[in-house]
Length: 499
Ligand code: HEM
Picture (cartoon, rainbow, N blue to C red):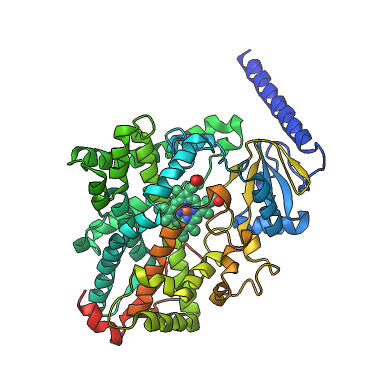
């Protein structure tokens, strides 16, 4: 009897799913039918999404065109792989596609969607306004420039002292993680993750391993996000892991909030400007707007900065260093530019960056070819029209930026690493040509901070050291270790000695 009931429930669920999927397909067949690969029952096109995702989507667009439809379990998705279609989409439907999908599993890591990854609306707009004014404005970035300079000086001094004891290889990624976590932590909470005396200790390594694990951006989704009938299964798998992870993030940031709340509060805005940590600014605002700046909003924002602001810059810098090792002529040209602008009697600083155009081009070219292939998904908040196709509300949008970044109609010799192409500024600013920081209203708010951190660190490493590849560097493979021997440049030894 019980077995019959179970059988009926299962049969009913399968029929319901079929009905829903057919209804969804009909919705899309509304007017002009979007091109789409053949799909399988229930999973739709899920089985087609092989890694690397950008390449898979590009291969599909070779067959189905610059705009096509995929069904990912219960979620309809639209893939755009061509510059002009992406431009059309965002010039007409920027607001419609300013939503991020409400994936059920993300609820656990976002205090129920009260972080910067919230859907488009008042809450998100207010938080973005806060970031633009209080964190990433030119004035705030200027104020935090001493933090970046100090942290970099500590790491460069450390490299120099290490090299005096005998040139040893440096794990570039581990080195950059300490640097970038310390910078972002000082901006967020006013203190370092790793004290300078401890940089090379086992204790510091263990701490960095833990921090990079806890604050790795949430890019994997649970199966239950796409197959609601599997949610109970993913609850015991991915979702349980996410809940555990979230508890760790929450405990880490709650400790920081409590410490700042209990310490001597900033008495005025001037005092905040001296202390400057994001948590102090947000706690001060909590006094006047407690309903908006709740503890969860503050913690969620601190977590977003630690997640979005560390791995991204570390991965990009590691790729840039790999590219420069493989292209010594580019490294030489960058060093000549720095020597011409800065000289050899001091180390470069934030004020030099606008004059180091070639360094800027190297980072843009690295971003174009490496790091991100598909933008974090968006979701349409209402029906709209793109390239003559009707797109219903609730459609996920996958923007395949790697297809545009390697399109020979957009970039000549697209597979070549040629920073010079960015010397013409329109390469960077020209519509949806360069999209490493995203597009439209959801574009990365930390882009100028990221560029400053990366230009300053990469530029200083180029200026102060000769680089030698300690082993075969595999360019573009972001997970392989990059080991470099940094030898102080003779011309800079005197300056390095005084750090
Ligand atoms: C190389 C460095 C970085 C790259 C390539 C990068 C790239 C991106 C991209 C592609 C997006 C999604 C944009 C879209 O959907 O159109 C994004 C969002 C975001 N980034 Fe960055 N980012 C970097 C560094 C940073 C830094 C340093 C911070 C802050 C400390 C930051 C904070 C954020 C935040 C908060 C969002 C979410 C914005 C929203 O949904 O409203 N990013 N970033």
